[in-house]
Amino acid sequence: MQPVLEAYAASAVVDAVMLSGSTARGDADRWSDTEVGVFWSRPPTARERAAVAEAARAVDIRMVTGEDANPPWYDHIYLGVGRPDGLMVEVVHTLTKVVDDTLDSVLRSCEPDPPGLDAIKGIVDGAEVSGAGADVVARWKARAATYPRGLAIAVVQRDGAIEQFWRWRMLVERDNPLLLAREFSRIASQLLNVLHALNGRYCGHPSAFKRLDALENELTIAPRGLAARLRSAFTLPAAEGAAVLRDLVEETYDLVELHLPEVDVERLRTLFRSDRRPLETLPTTFRAGTHHVPISPTGC
Image (cartoon, one colour):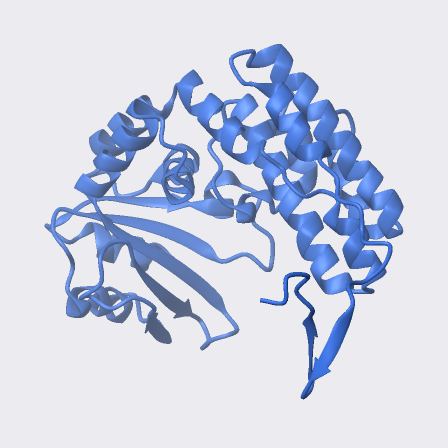
């Protein structure tokens, strides 16, 4: 792994190299990849990116994003043995200026952009490994150290709008566990985004929720037993799981009222509690070929 980091740091047009993700946080397991951020003063060429893999004696490199695309660019470098086995190093290349612009839009303008939030989370959790970019990374970390209240409000207003909770009953009636699981995941993801904002933690994508038990330590402002209750929502019978999610959302709204009174929680509750009654009788139809077409009462 070290040869990869050293090869990037050796480039005169690389401003900083960071180790991020579970490896930087110290909670990697045997399934984990290694995530590296490389910050360039100008767009790298494909040849420059491939040269790093060669210098590190990588078994394989897959350029996920071509050099003609806009940043970020992604490479997967495989060490030891070829894909899909061995250690995969996921490299995210971007420009130093892009990070500065992202910090401006998210922190100064309070724009709750998920990729921007994830990028800042990577800065906060990551560690500068080359030494040469220590000043650049320290400047970024200092800017992100304070989570703006305006950003928390913006995230809660967006992700706290959990609509169409009633859909779980429709999906149960249709015997569609696939879409039911997706619906429960949507609700849980929005809930966790709200809780991260309440706790001043950057989060833009559900992949941040890899360790549910770690939420108990990270999210001090949260419903009691959060991790265990989230697990149960996906393992209990559908009606019981829906009840667990409903209670978690309602308790989270209580916390929003307490800690972010600027948010119109009543509006969020109204959206969440909205219901739809199914039709007791289906409309009269006639068969046209293989299609059932509703009859218009006006004849038009």
